[in-house]
Length: 249
Image (cartoon, rainbow, N blue to C red; front, top):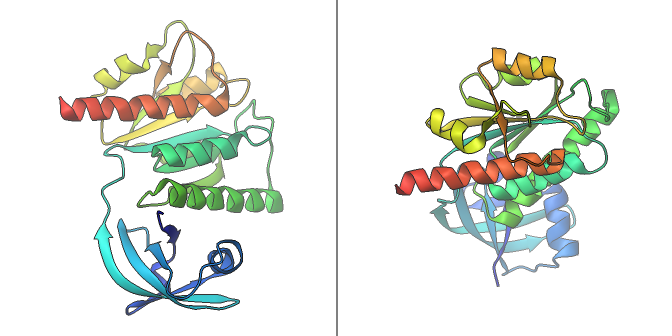
């Protein structure tokens, strides 16, 4: 049986001990019902997994002792940022959850002209905390070495400013858009890639033009039109596949 894994802050390490608190401690005690002597994996986001044995399981804190460490080599060789437009329902959550499992490095959530979901103030902060929690849990489940950063809610120009050192593809199913395969060959697949995904109604022509001003290329994934919660996942999967093929070739 594979051990349970938890991402914690580096500040929670004290010598060869780890202090696990908050929701992680509650899950260990009440959900998983782990006991002293049980083994878990603890990660600090640096790419190292620490093999730990539980020493004490309390109501508000779990204490674990570090017994070994291994450097993980599971992260993709391409750093991928997904700029995802706000969408209604659980669509953004699906993108973050499954995108994290696949290997996305960062999510930037943006409000676009056709975004149905509008967030501000308290609602925005609550939603952002939930999205960050989803990324953490998905990273633990997928046995990743790092948790993707989830930021937002930004304007489209603000998000594009964050991607100026990356090759940018804006997903836009127009007749004159490049195929993703052609774009990847032309861009030589840089180490950093940014994928811009519109909301349910797509990006406006003005927003696509804005992306192009930042060096983006309009890219089409296939002849069919994909839902917003599907498009990013298909694009990321194809990029990672192309990167693996290019590396082996």
